[in-house]
Image: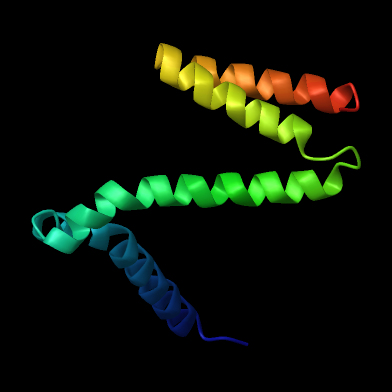
Length: 108
């Protein structure tokens, strides 16, 4: 049987480590905001992550679709065209998603 004080001590240590890991980004943010590398990553990383997610999804879904990658490509073209034309991300995403779902359900 585990000693109660030992178990409580372990739980307290885990709680402190968890709290410290959660608080560290907020404490370090003040010092890191002015660092040039962090500023460069802040401009580049969101676009890079979205591009990688898009490519991963496109390739994965196109492989699973026996009729080819046409639904995925049409959805991406729709999103890009609407975004360039209207500059409304929600409209672009909704239209691209709707087109993709319609085309996949139609067997295209």
